[in-house]
Image (cartoon, rainbow, N blue to C red; front, side, top):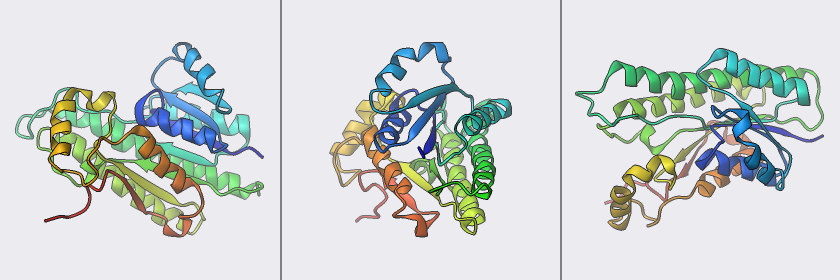
Length: 256
């Protein structure tokens, strides 16, 4: 039976690269983002050349959207094998922690952290229900996309860092809770990835990379993150539930 994957925040950048990788890995892949479904027809035509792709509009910060997404997928396909929680936002304006606003803080926590938490909860409960049905070849997994900002201080966007640190704890909590149920949960931490989100600070990052901030002296590409997700979904890492996969050019290494 065909395996089913959901990838959130899949309209572009890292999420789109992950969706493409899931398709080439043989998953029927449901992409979701906040873009209306009428605006992604050309993208779906392109993706359906790689495999079976579908798109559902979903704002992960809204309970009704999450429930609609998860219920629609399970009702249509009868199973849910992988959920990749990639959706997230950056600060609208970078402000120092001495100046940032409650509105900005709450927005990032609501979407990035709270949205990921309840996507994990909703996915996990449906995966448990699928297990109870005794589905053939059913080995569900959850993968959360965080960031090197989960542990790296950036005082000009503190709320973003805190929201990503929250995702790291969300991963630990669900990895712990779901271990006895045979549902591994993983975290992928992208580093400096060349996407629309980093375009505004491209020159800054390019200089830092040239100076050696990462041992591998190049921008990461969305495909580098997608390959880590593929590894997490392969089954080869299941005994290491809670594992963090770094897609960061070696940034996480402590160096002298």
